[in-house]
Image (cartoon, one colour):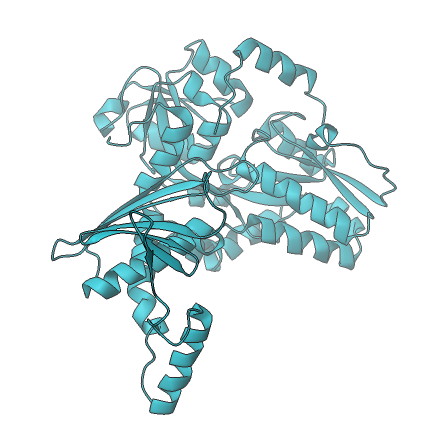
Length: 444
């Protein structure tokens, strides 16, 4: 994926010229006769995954409401800093805002509990807490502040530290480190405890402050580091995962109550759906990886004991990686190396090359050949070459024979456990940004 390497001056000049334009201004105009015209402000770059998903949701809301509700997205702090936007939201200057918990904590202190350092070890812990009692408690406190927050929290990500002056590898490396933090008490307290020198700044001042070395570094989730192009003014990135952060979708209470119940339901349904994180089941590369890992463990007769995965940049429209690599090993020493890619200039369809210890094989749909393109007859392998038919035959036969079918849920659970480990490992996140920025060394 080619990155925009245009000069800072031209990019900043363009940003100023577009400062008052909503994201929708860059989309061909359409006639608008909306019954409700609302504004939504965010602080992230238009290319940030959350803004892309948000625009998709707003388009669906306009469609499902029959054009009665038109919500325009203003990204990249076009209408003011995050704290300014929060003030506008409370006063009715804007109608919706997607706001980080760390910033919201200035106004609703209990929201800061989500930024407790090292409280969340992984996303399983995050969503269990936020979709449960903790999330409900925080939402209840937000509702007391003339804001509506009855929506699922969106993922911002685990926060990482970047630096232009030093490689942060241990807590001692933070001593005296002048680091930008949002105007959030939890982050200021954490970095003060680490003997750093936290400097609260609004995010729209961060790039310039790093460029002019007013501050040495900053901390943010990887998606923000990438889309804000902070790698242009930073040299190091340390995958510290020091705290998790989320975005609350907030509504001005008066604006929300003006909407009839049917429009409220359309907004809630689509905002919640867009905020759901994409899982590996939505991702065709992971789908093929699941088949291969399951087959490898089945043939080896062992469970994978060591594995890791890397994936390339996220496609800006599809929101999935186009390339992936997986390496796995079982206790006996047998290894699997798997490379998957959508960037394929070969035949369309499921085309695989298997390099084994007893030869090389190429599979294309139901056809199989060796490494020299000699066809291999597979017509007598089974009663059919249709995988769905064979699966149905096996399950029906297992029911008749009162036994567990081959390929049951119980038998594929080890494969799911491996995929879960691969998805949650930080190394995957590191390589995503390494591909996009070039300033993280995957081996670090």
